[in-house]
Structures are given as structure tokens and as C-alpha cells.
Length: 360
Image 1: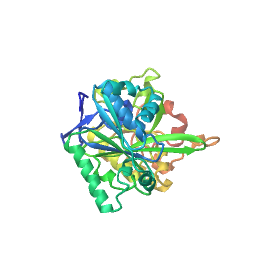
Image 2 (image 1 turned 90 degrees about the vertical axis):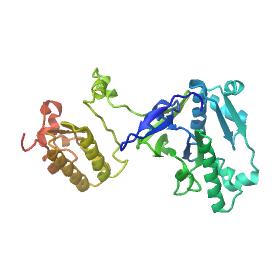
Image 3 (image 1 turned 135 degrees about the horizontal axis):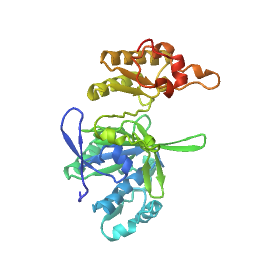
């Protein structure tokens, strides 16, 4: 579609490539490693009010404004005027783009009885009159195949179901990319998160990332490695660019301890470092019991020793009050570390006072 520049993503296992279509939402393009799959269908799912329609509209608007790419929005819920008014809150002049024939909006009215039966106004509303689930699944597949055969880069939205990503539990399986939007209120504070659940043919960021809906559109908060150090005058990006430094950031609750260990092993084999920093090891306690975390840490230390990685610096958070001499991690795990390197006492004196290595 249009002249939108394409990003090419390489899989980890081979040099196979997958053309991608940038969304124009910067951080979203970072965690998808280039954007949405070109010529394929992306499903954006979530509960009501999570931002599905806004994401789809911003994808179309930025395509028209930044990439000179025409787009079409087919809506079953909001009329043309309603969509134009709602998106105006993000600073987008959709009416002007429609006038210039860069965007087209088609509102399809559905019978009220069908809408009430469906209970929502997303993709499912289109098939509300189909009571035969087999026919429904067949029609969904036919729609997605029709879009793909025409090389259209499509975004469809679906309401989240009970125990499934969508109401019928099929769209997520026949879509090439699935993006889940969530919004939860905890202690009267609204938190929004985006998660790329799957992306066929390419790697992608697997964590959940917070995002905001602001006056200038959707903003995904994806912290880039090294930004914090730059704030104190240390530029780490140049070493990353030279291939001498590698960052891997992962939320401890993203998956279990075993998968964390497998991922670390894979990274170490690929990058083959001489020095490793794990920061902080206490975060492992969020992924399992203290016993499980200790076992995982011991296996990691043994792996590092066996790989001849001669330096390991593991930082750990301490308890408050009188507990400055003791970390949350079991001492046995901390004292089996490989030889320490550089001025450890000057960096973390309280930590190393109680956890001095046995040798080195």
C-alpha cells in the first residue's frame, strides 16, 4: 500500500525476511521490530475502552500524513462524523484527509437486534446473525484470506472474550500478528499496557509495555537500554553499536524462572561475553519461591563458570532498617559467584560486606 517505507526483520534462526509496515507510533514500531506485517492482517484486541479503535485510526492517519499512503476505515459502531470528532482529540484532522482523498470512512449500519445479540461493535458484530459456529469460522477465514490475497495491510479489532483473546477465539489464530491492549484500575489509578501476543515470521518484544493516550496520539513507553546512563554523561550506545556491549531487559513476571534461565543461556552463547551483570538478582523472587530462585541462581553461576566467564557482578536489593548487612537472596547462592572484577567494595560496600566471594 502506498509508498510507506518497509522495515525488514530477520528471524533468529535464518536470514528469512518479512516485510513490515511502520505504524508511525515510534515505540510500537520498536517493540514490533519495524511495524505491522505488510500485506497481512493484524488483530488488535482488548476490552471496551482500551484504545483499539484509536490505534487503528492512528495507523491510518499516520500512513496518510507521513507516508502518503491512502487508507480505508470500515466502522460498524461510529459514524463518519463521530470518528472524525473522536480522533480530533488526538490532534488529527481526519476531515481534511478525507477531503484530500487520502482517507475514506465507510460506516455500515447494522440492525439493532443484531447489535444487541452480539453485545459489541467490533468485527464480531459483522457476523452477529450467524448462529452456526462452523459457518462463522468459515466466513472469518474467508474474510482474512480475501484481505491477504489483495495484499492489504489490515488492522481488525475484536472484543476480548471469556478466557480467549476474542469473543469467538478464532481471530487470534488466523491473524498473522496479534496485539493485546489492556487497561486496569488499581488504587484508583488507570494503567494501560500493550502486549504483542504473537507475530508470525519474525521476532518481537515479548513483554508488556505501558502506553498512554495523549493529545498527540498513542505513546508506548519503551525504555531503551543506556538512556539512564546518558543522563549522567555516559554514552553506552556507542559500545552497543560497536558490538562490545549488549543489554537484555525483561520483566521478572513475564515468565517463569526456567524460561528466564533458558533465555540467559541463549544470550550468553550468542554474544559470548567475558563479563556479565545481573541487576538485580532479587527480582527473581517475583518469579518463584526463594528456594526456586536460589536453585536457578546456582545453576546460572555454574553455567557461567563452565563457560569461562571470569567476572559476574550481581546486584541485590537490601531490606530497610537494620537489614543493610543482608540481602533478600539466600547467602549460599551469592557466595558461589565466579571471581569478582574491579572495585566492588567502592561500588556496593554494604552488599559485598556480607557476601564476599570465597575466592578470586
